[in-house]
Length: 80
Image (cartoon, rainbow, N blue to C red; front, side, top):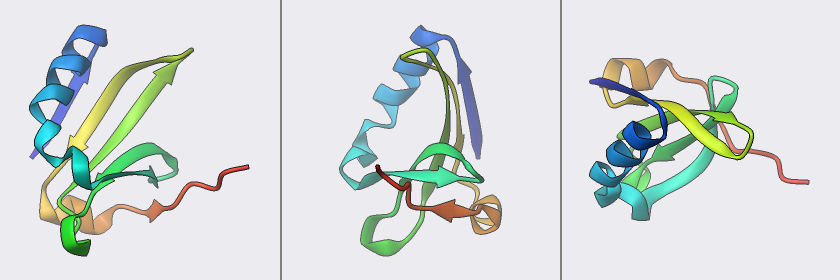
């Protein structure tokens, strides 16, 4: 399953719908870009890439397909 949303309102609505997994969400680099991963009990179930313009999230892509999840390159962000 892949879901994409563009524009502040669409992104906000989709984020609310995905709120159930928020407790398991962590910041990550997903294929080299800012993203969020959800991995309850260490099992990756969702990955979200995020496009940011200025201080706003303007677009994101949600990946839940197990085959696509296995092919993602994930890394922890390095904080200054």
